Image (tube, rainbow over all chains, first blue to last red; front, side):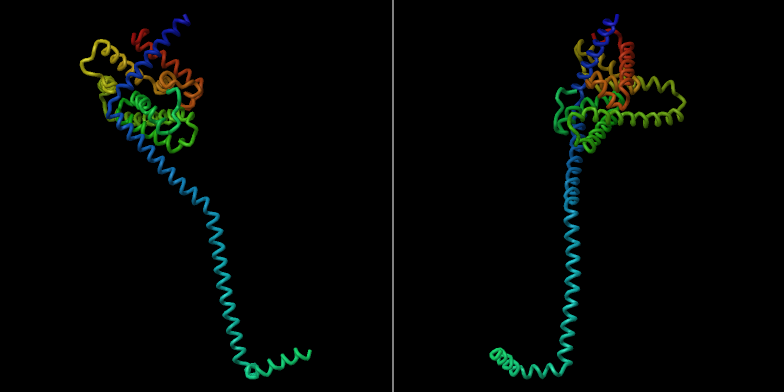
Length: 125
Length: 189
């Protein structure tokens, strides 16, 4: 009884499979074309997603390097800027000192005398 | 299901698209809806699961197809309820719908004009099967097609239908019982 039922079931399944396979073979070309187009559309979307992912991955990889480089350049720019201001201040101060001190100007006038004096010291000493 | 699963997503989709279309057509009896279901399933598989190992694609793809078909059923049933609400001639509509389903299935299997006797019998058996499958409850229809036609085992079918293996067995057994009673003991012989 069980075997008989199983055989009937097997026949039904085999017949159904065969009919379904036949139905596949009979699908018209219009539907096949549309399915092909649908597949192409899906694959095109996949390719676009892949490209977008690749770009975002590259950006993610470059992000730490870029941020470090950017920070470093900002810090460097600040230091250079500060250094320039400082050196400008020094030169202005020095100039002011030179201009304002009369003694130093006299010193420059007797420069040859002081140079001779130093050479004498070296020879004797 | 093919013996070996293609390793590229394009080849895999090419190998399953006709079966998926036929499944969707049996469920919807509508060419455009069936095409939309297959296209949506393809796009979703490609976008979400193309990175998975190719051996995982068949159950995933059929799961997407079955989910999309169920969504279609939900939408259609809501639409039909509205239609019924506005229409009074329900009994007339049922007869028209049954006739239309049979015609739709005949068109679906692309029956040839002036067939031979054997071809004619085959065509009739095919239409009969399609119509009866279309009349099955959606879960039974899915279980039958995935198990019998796609060759998925109980576990894979459960995965594709998102139900337990026990439920798959129940739906499958009921589907076979219903088909046998509708198509006869010696169907297609």
